[in-house]
Image (cartoon, rainbow, N blue to C red):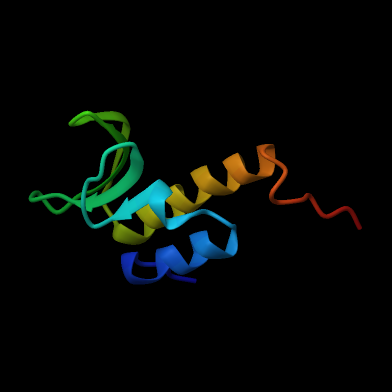
Length: 87
């Protein structure tokens, strides 16, 4: 499965993540951001007051997308929004 920036928002929506918690393709204050950089890398980071925190670079777009989804999935799991399935 390949997830790219044009579909990552739909997956975050499935996890119940409000659109005002992230920015895809640009920076926005107090949001998790996923950006394409001039050097061809992709970066995921928390943006606050013009600074980047917890920034992680990726060589591939799909890896950055999966990372962002994973961060939110873990957060939603800890918040009780997602439930662990026990079969």
